Length: 301
Image: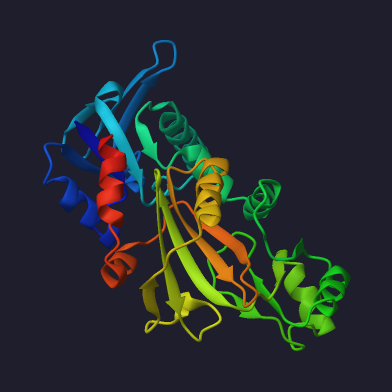
């Protein structure tokens, strides 16, 4: 059995999973897409639906021999810059198209799939889908219209903001942020996600196959990712919310995910987001919950 890990040894989570899987009777290889097309080769025949990878170490892997792929880091392609800019642009487009096609054509068990990765890039749709399947979400606005943003802000006692696609920590919106000149300048560069602030307890749930593991995150920080001293304590979700975790994963095309919740003082569970490639080592070390074991079972099944 062959398992690929999308990423390389520089990522602690990829390295941990590879080392753990190698204790089983399987062959495990890194698949670092940044090495394509300079060091990594791929071939695909659409008419026969056959393809193969040639790794930098000379290992040849045929489509049909790859049992599963763990999606840790997708780095795109790397095309060296020639003197001709047009040639470079063509090279990047062609290499990216070939790689994306190869990923979607490979019939291995993907944890998670290209479809899940793509859906995660559209976080506003993620929220809309959660609402559609009956999950409670914060009142939210995605906009680059200063008037709409000010109107939304005045409807709520406390408001936070963050990038539409993520990648930066959540911040409280202040009067300083709403200064007209500043607001117009910033919103000409990009829209922003504005949400009502949800008071309460931070929870993170890992949905892995049919299992759900949850911990309370005790932190005084607005965004607990900024708090290195945050405490993680195992937490038992009600059956209805565990089922919502499974529904979210299915609706977002996810084999596994980390779902962030706020549990309000009134006892309501409010969905914040679901990550298709979350970090898990610190969570597992702090709580003792069997994240690695469940991921291995998913990849070996």
